[in-house]
Length: 490
Length: 95
Image 1 (tube, rainbow over the protein chains, first blue to last red):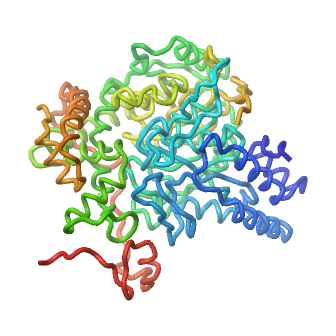
Image 2 (image 1 turned 60 degrees about the horizontal axis):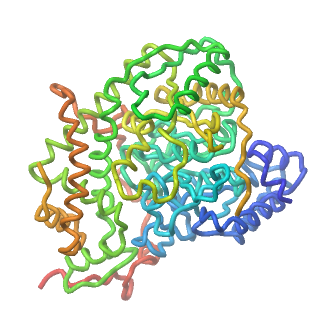
């Protein structure tokens, strides 16, 4: 039944609809693939019994003619989403064996539509990282390898487990989250499609908080159409998240395959950064050529504050994180390390529970919010953030969407950037601007580099205009005809 | 503004993270590396620019001031490190 794992989500849903196979058969094939792929370390918790039980319930619904839009489709869930009765850790020791008594809204939406859960996926601790190496469960290994090499590569981060499991055909799609590029960079590193929707599209309720004004959920999928199907299910207003947008969710899949003729696509000149590999530059030119052939008008635009996005992000995100992570005090849930008094208990708990990168960010956040530095750092960053958002507003007066590379390199080796936090942060140079401005961004696999590793192109859209991204993404996908898959070594 | 070991000690204390004395110098150097890189923000002219505090243009929604859920102590306590008779057990707060 291994061929069932090769299907796209759309093809699997079609197969379920015309009774070519049952959800139980489909799910079993994926459960077996997950169990056989443990060397990838993509799953931190497998839930095979729950998956089969959900699949059987799905088959029963379908037999009664009550199937939902995702009915019977096995998915992976990033372990940042709280799942009722199923351990949820954010891949941090401080949450330890936390078992939520509630379900995140995004996952509840997926179950409402009939999806099946295969288990919980690995990520950087609290989604803080670009290589999955900060996970308390150890890094995910990218299913892709450089040609002729056995070296272990990162799948990117923070949604490394989501991206790796989709690339390795362990699930039909996965939930992910993106605070500075955590959906798009892993998608680019693994030859998968990932979209971070407009801020407020997906409810943040029940998603472990990192930086609340930047965090947004989205899918990682095998195709643009699959991503559209998943995002439609995940999105929607939720009164439990006050920043959730109370607007109708468009029929995203209907935008895939639409003509892009006459759309104006902007090329931001500031994204041509020094030291960018020639292959990425070439791929970008190729993407421009594809869109031209499809009838788009290409326009050079300027986003003058681009280079300040990452430094602004590394004030805003740690500031919000230091506040959000104050809740891990060892009193009501999670780890507790006793001390001589209350303060010492807090300090010991947090010292033992958080990993080095999380501590580093909490310290930066605490520093930039502390008395005397608030105006110089935090307020300054919020003003620069406005400048960055204004840049996009001005660009979008002239164009319908922007095309850029997703990441400045292909997947790199584990440990390569581990000693230099700033070098690691630069991975998000092309993706982080979108989070600061609250805009939708999507990564589409577009080619491979000289070592056979996948590279992605990023589309950035106007707020609430994911539809145009799905149309343009579909056009790039069709032109690129990206069929490469990682050779199975696990 | 360089961050020294004393600043790290103070910030770690504010953040309630125990950091051993022998690690303070190394942390100071890491944080300095990051903050020096961040300093480039001072190049941006932000005179008269409103700080952007939210990614979305919408007023904060109001809701009815009513109880929506609750009354289930066992759920609330189910992940607590220490409980007794339906209460959280915490270190002594008042001497």
